[in-house]
Length: 296
Image (cartoon, rainbow, N blue to C red; front, top):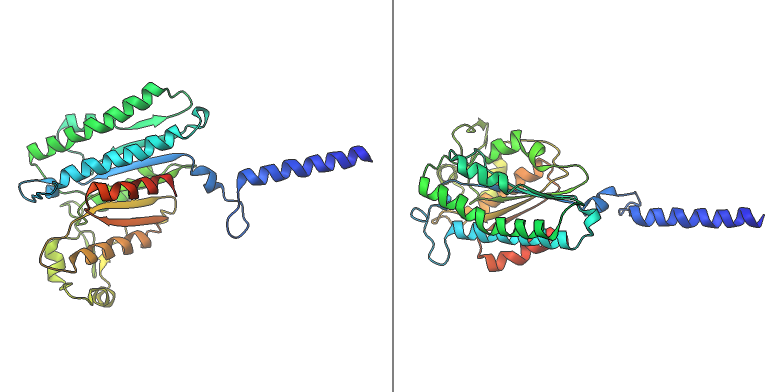
């Protein structure tokens, strides 16, 4: 009898340990996604349109392409801090950079390949140092090439969400975070569609034509059912952070219109979490980026 009692106590002990490992959500159900958050899959989608051109859109406090570069460094730092905080045997993390469409310069595409990095149980300190160095130097070469080339063809963000985001940016048993570096406008000649009041693009000219230049712009958007055309469904395993919203001057509500377009679109596609941030100075956004990656 004592033996049976001992086995029962032992079994209850192991069951309790198992529960503590699994974690539970607010409804008392096992939530495996909590443990999956230990593995990061970070993607960075860069808008290489003319928004980065320092001649066309100068900013004396800090050029917009330089802000992008600092945002990328902050993302890299957050990712590496995450790696250093894990035991080597637990490593299953990756980070990569994307463009859509791909630049015509093959060297830029080669640089992007070098920026696709992953860590597993075989990772060494040298590997971490190498990734740190790559993300501190190679993105600068990408932006310099695009600015020198001046062949700005727009950025097909809508098309990326339609055809590529699930394959490229979502990985099972990982916390998937997509950072998008863009001014918030969206346009590409191969992804220009209209469905009633909704579009696959957003330009300053479109905002003007829709007369979204007053405080009641949300009412106008609701009445006319304005917004982005839904490009995907059930992106509930993806977090999206949009950095760099930079509205054209002249309409005090332009930035709010851009954010509303994005927020409604991401919500409609059932993105798990999302934030849309202005093109603020990196010193202000760095702690925000770090907090997002740490999950705190």
